[in-house]
Image: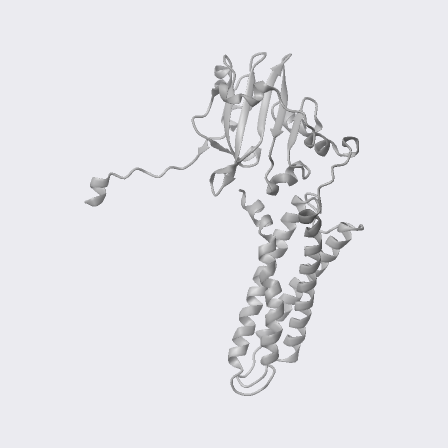
Length: 325
């Protein structure tokens, strides 16, 4: 799984630390208000909690931005939520409280590190800022939870295909690709093992091609009429092919032109933002979602120098006799 998708999925985990700090920090700073000897341990506790809250607030804001784009709350390149009603209004409030929480966290951190004598209290300013930080953090967490509830508890409602955008309308279609594409393992494999492909979602891929088109593929030339090329894929997991299968990419030469097919029967939840949030997708022919394929493969194949060559790294073999010596 790409690290950005991993960060997005861990947003809810990162949020727990700022919320916990929101409850604990005001208690520590309240105990540090009494002047006199023995205040230094409370200072250290408050400073430690403030650092933890700020660092995890940064992680929560960054991962929340990635998750919002995956869930289509934000468009690509967009950082602030647009005005709207319903979930859009809740998300806008959640984002505003999260931003205010981050600012108040930095102010609280600065205040608890002000120079003081060992017998002095931590100060009312720190206590006030920590209370405001706690309120905004808890509020941001509450409204974030309101956004997650419809996704987890509500039954999915599939509208009529005519009212959907192109990607979603085709994604919920029951149409299947031809058996020739689904039976891709009967074709000739061009890779003995998976290779990393950054241009197709950083997935691990293998190319399969019909008989008689292998030489054209190796030379990077245009495939002959009727040739079929299928690229199977697997999602990346920690630098190796993971357990989740990626989409099938197919290209068939008809009347001198490539015809593309994209089929993803089971989309992992973390990758559904790529296809409009649907759980499966099937695009073929003149589908608008295949425009990028036609742009890169206008003449059929990508050139040989542009193809992926990064394979799974293997551990070197160690001779046990030499190793013992």
